[in-house]
Length: 242
Image (cartoon, rainbow, N blue to C red; front, side):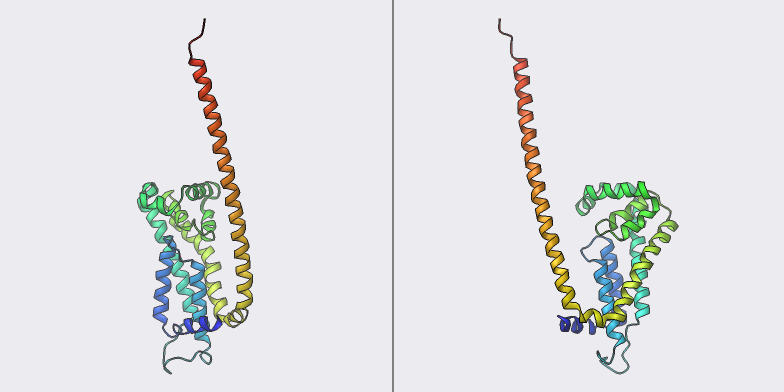
């Protein structure tokens, strides 16, 4: 697995503009709710940075080949995240609540997620932007809601930059400088990761099974009550026998 990772990312260590452009593209797609986790893009960028910092391990194709600069990489990642977040905010501010009534939006965002976003906005105000940044699945509707509810653009940028400034460059630079140790312990990490993922999946299945049984029981009870109520109405409406 280590060889696969290194061989894949090393080919981009000396293609800086391709990497910077790809980060911007993937961040915009992620902000629009596409199944491209932002964290995966940042970690991948960090691995590319690690390759460029170690030319003795990953030699360039030519002696004068341009390489990815890890600080530019972190900066591009930060501004790509901020730009994509603000784009979603601007769409919400531009088109307002009517966006939430469109068919394509209801397909992308569930009613439960939208209600949760509204509740957080009412409870926490502009500080909810931080919650949206670190909560997968609500980032897109959350930033739209910030614009639709009239949150000041300067407050949105200020709070979002605090959250993004803390998480985005940190992830890129940590992987860039400590990629050797990450790769070294990747196998051990993979075991823990998939064990945790498997446990969470089993718990999820149990939860959904119990939820399904409760729903069936409630439906059956409601049907029984409705039938009893209908029968009582029929008895009440029958002619009185003399």
